[in-house]
Image (cartoon, rainbow, N blue to C red; front, top):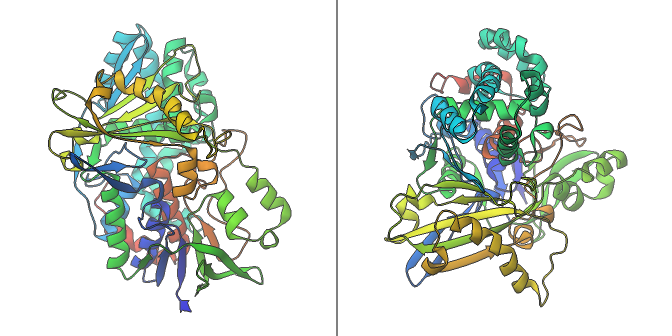
Length: 510
């Protein structure tokens, strides 16, 4: 039986951030991962073909400020204090939105983006500029406070008042907008024409999985600010390079990662977490347990029903989910594709909702910037779109259904590379069942679909003393910054204020 200070269940980005920071604070930490690869939904994997070895991102592909000194990206700040900065390639434009009526380039440079919007829809640039100005006012004080300073307890307020009084003063006029939805902020700015409203619905959907009326305004303010004021970059080595850096940071400070170590249950004694029991029967004792599993998997599989108050457990398990995804991973010949860009979003039908499964497809071609992820002369392609979990089962129709569902992804990639089918040398199709199986995620989801004004994200605390949660079911936003921030909040709340504040001196000024 092993005894440590902290056990982390799962090595997703939230778990690795929390574990790495707590190791940095001097705690004895062990991270238990059921799979042979760390990273959760952000892991990278390799597949061989006759052409050679291809490396694929399994999930995240959009990043800002990863290698920027003084970045406001929470993940970048964690890597800095762990002593594991990574290399990233800057690029512009950010990507392209392909609508049936044309293609819109998406620039980080605000003036270029507004000019592109105006060219696409006359009169839209002024409306967009007014909204952007309001959102950037929300972003400005948020950027001045490093995410690494955040805590989930009352000690946060005196820290902010002492170290960042200017940011707090600047934030006061924006307080009403902090509790509003993006749709409410837009309504306060003015009437938006239908095309621009659809564009903003798309941008909200890409960030939160929900449209404007359902997405909290600070999420979008941070996205607008990072796109406009940070460096848009892609990590050399893909998402796997980020995971590897977090694992190195965990180990550098004395933490332990145990791969192929599935947890059977969280051990609860007298209402307090006391460690975990592994599938092999081994017990790891600890006074603090951090679950990087989803809220549904934590409360339904890692705990027994009597560990939680009935009403609390029922409400948590009733949390609505973002749909799962269909993924298409391809290895293709790259000749003649010198001008192809890395990121694309394809909307097939302007008359259908952007949240309709299959209508909005994301396409990433990371080897445009990082050629080491494919053999010489080849590209990797990662395309994905929403797909409900219901109705999927492994039966005689499974393979045919996979191919039928992948067709909309092929059509999306053909907007960028018309002859992609003739170029292919490697193909993999992932379904919601793939997500559920390999990522150990309830219904293969990427997180909760909690709409603004209809509920709040639960945060990392639980009714069980010593049990905390991190990951995409604790904070708004289904992207990397949100899960990294969840790990920061959890780790900092488990140490004294002097300890957590001390790390801030290791950061470059924002």
